[in-house]
Image 1 (cartoon, rainbow, N blue to C red):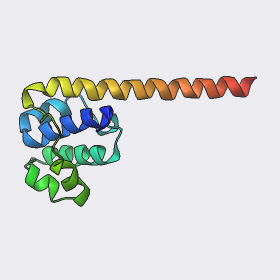
Image 2: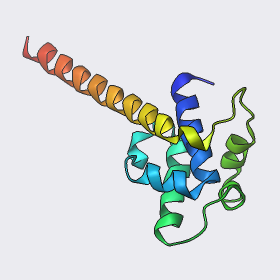
Image 3: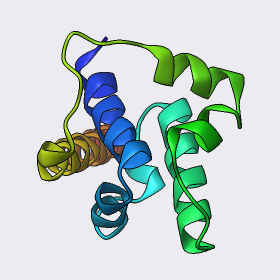
Length: 116
C-alpha cells in the first residue's frame, strides 16, 4: 500500500471500529482531507451516519459499497490501533496540507509562466 493510502486506511479503519476514534477524527479531519476517493467517500458516509446518530461499524460500512468491502477486507502487515488515532489524524492532515501547498505552488508556477 502506498504511504498516503496507508495513512488514510489506518484512520478509516480505526474510525469504523471505534465511535470514540470517529468522534476525535470528525473534530479535526474533513472528507476533503482524504486524497483517495474510496477513503474520502467512506469517511463522508461515516460522518453522515454519525451526525444522524446512527451506528457506524464495520458491518454497516462494508455492506454499503462493494469497493468498501474490499478495502476493509485488506489485511495489512500492521493492524491500526485505536490508541494511535491521534497519530493517524495528524498523518492525514499533514498529507492534506502538503497537497494544498503543492497545488498552490503549481498555480504560482503557472501564473509566472504566463507572465513571461
